[in-house]
Image (cartoon, rainbow, N blue to C red):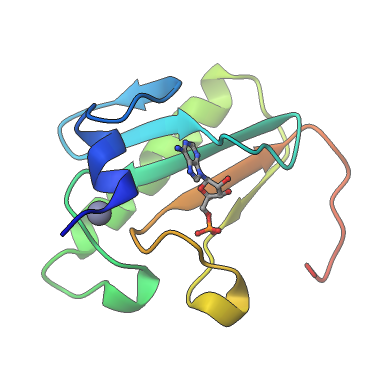
Length: 111
Ligand code: AMP
Ligand code: ZN
């Protein structure tokens, strides 16, 4: 399977790295929607939140502790974490990712 984010996580496709460990990879979005906009992905392929199961859920908790740590390190005191699931919700890459957006006023509800 040729997956863009699997190729980014493995370094086959270059990206602007924010953070990496054995389980996950974080990098700046190529089309930022806020002054700070990065993505956190698991290294192992998971298609979206809808493919999270008891077998792979640990990496999701880990990704959230990484988000909290990175936000602290980057000095983000207010930010939004978003995951789009399915085309109607705006998912365009079918490898689980959490968007972290910060640095501007946000509206609610999201569009
Ligand atoms: P989504 O549309 O929620 O699936 O999010 C996919 C995100 O990946 C979008 O915000 C894109 O701008 C971003 N993206 C696509 N290709 C790349 C890339 N090569 N490097 C960094 N971000 C990318
Ligand atoms: Zn993948």
